[in-house]
Length: 407
Ligand code: ADP
Ligand code: MG
Image (cartoon, rainbow, N blue to C red):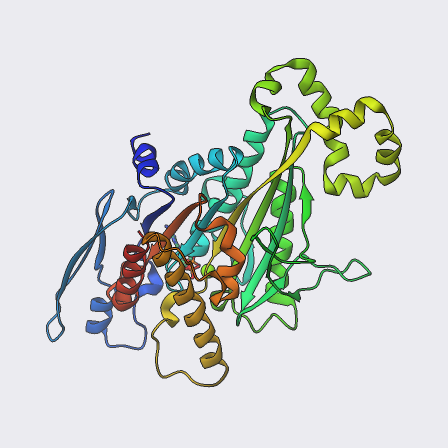
């Protein structure tokens, strides 16, 4: 609770940092025994629950001894539960009408996917959902959204999901189907609507009724990412994954909250809800038009308004590419796109932090896509992921710098 109140005071961008445990693959294979031990030495620590300490002194190297402050720092023993406990209040905000974005930033292997989705099955991007306690932010956030909705009058909320991948500054719709219903990743473009909102025309939005339907769709999208011929080149760490939940709320008159206390009105609201939602409208076109001729229903419809809020959950491409040199060919092309999108993201967060009038969202597809859930009164949580080993010192310092500038 203390954390949450601090978070509120700090405004709309908060940065949390998670330091994962040292893992067996952190050794530097191919190096001599002595150097291996040095490389797998721990250099990044959670000094306390708001401070990261990076401490390293090796003979022949410049020594580092630096601290970084964030809204919250998780040590290597802190569970998925502990991380999610700090995320949950954002979902309450989401249902209160705020757009929310949660993104994981860090080099490949630092724990972004673990934090956002959960541990992955070997060679398969579908995540293991058998182990409840290991679930990451995306499945938990969805469960929480549906739990919060279940406390509201039934039928007054509609949840739609989209899954996209941003690769080489192109957006791929991972839920798009061809005329035979076969799912295929298709290129889409993001535009800005007349109301100034960013939008991806023709992007597939699937209505989901519960968390397991949602997970099924996300898994399908993730699977496509590794099996589809035109996408398979995009290794998960080379692309950004953006999962969007769009929540449509039926607002009745101009005082939804109070009206919903009224049993009669909420009953009426439930009846009307099915009639207003886009998906349902498409499903029962004939029934809704016949229903619309009833005078009572017409009156109710006039007083009803749809409010859309968005939750965007982002597993960013590996940040090790920023400033990386010595790469060539296709990897160089990928690297320069990742570079540009992550620096466009840094520019956007910098402009917001400095409260500049112009925020350069349009410099990359990634920031354009996230425009509505980053900045303004939207709430953003950046989850910095850090590998603690000496081997990744440079990348960790870069990530900590990114997080520091964003605040
Ligand atoms: P990234 O997505 O940033 O490339 P991953 O999430 O795939 O990194 O994590 C790399 C490896 O580290 C995976 O095997 C993952 O299960 C493990 N890992 C990451 N974070 C943790 C953690 N907090 N606790 C235990 N294992 C973790
Ligand atoms: Mg990953």
